Image 1 (cartoon, one colour):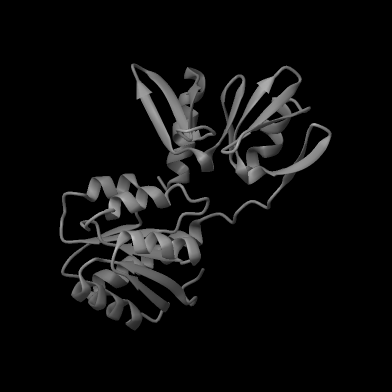
Image 2: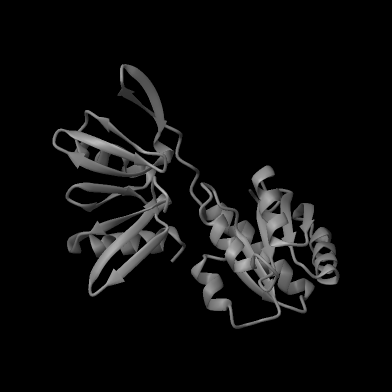
Length: 249
């Protein structure tokens, strides 16, 4: 994406006058190529499952699924779109930026303030690193060889001379040392958090601190769909710094 690229924008707001006004103002911006509108967060989520968009302009207070709740769902996407919250309420600003929102625009929306939000979206995308090239790892089970995308691996666990690759669907044992994967996969965002664990920064959904003990939450198999991994004290600061850097400071 560059300043000359036509951005595809999704606008979500349950109030039709506000939705139409925001869509109108965005359509006038020369950096915007297409504006798609939805009048509920649920409809917006369905649209995002069907279409790729460059940015979502999202109201917060909506009946049913709220804007903050939709943003939490989008944060679990493999490649979540940037979000700009557009709301009449200042009270949710902290929650919005906890969800890594690009901007927080207050209603009534001014054209110059909206242009600034678009600028932040464009500049943020230019700073973002290019996605790592997909790497497939052959794994064997029951005499059948399958291929697992490295991008789907949430964390890696050492098991003697082997390593267990964990994904949201399950795990696979491969004959390679954890230290080898640590060196080879560092460029793809895998970091050591324990002497026996690597984690993919892209899959970290939460960082938890409890009485000085740090852990991270990633996607996992099973009913809860989550896995909590303990971070050793010696790796806690490095992990925190890397996550902050990844989030843009």
